[in-house]
Image 1 (cartoon, rainbow, N blue to C red):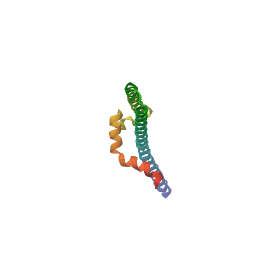
Image 2: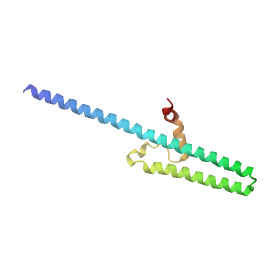
Image 3: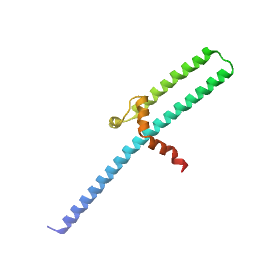
Length: 135
């Protein structure tokens, strides 16, 4: 047997090994990117909820300052509470529906409360995202 067959086999083996490791590294990076994007989405949704609550508080103070009726303030509170719950449901439903079927088994949450627990478990990654531009 000629030696060139050995060289060809070694080359093919090396090429396939390189492609395999490249594929595995890319798959790992893709999964990490998907996980990070979920965390960033949840972080943005929670910030939106915080801002909404803050604006509701400002409106209640404004109404109280201008001597609005208690019924008006109560109606504002009820409307804000229902809109906030609707936003939470829609935000999680949208995230779950936009997740491809292949990645749905990796979802660790199904509603707002479990999503916030998931965000709390990955708190350090979320904080690193906010600090990224401040370095």
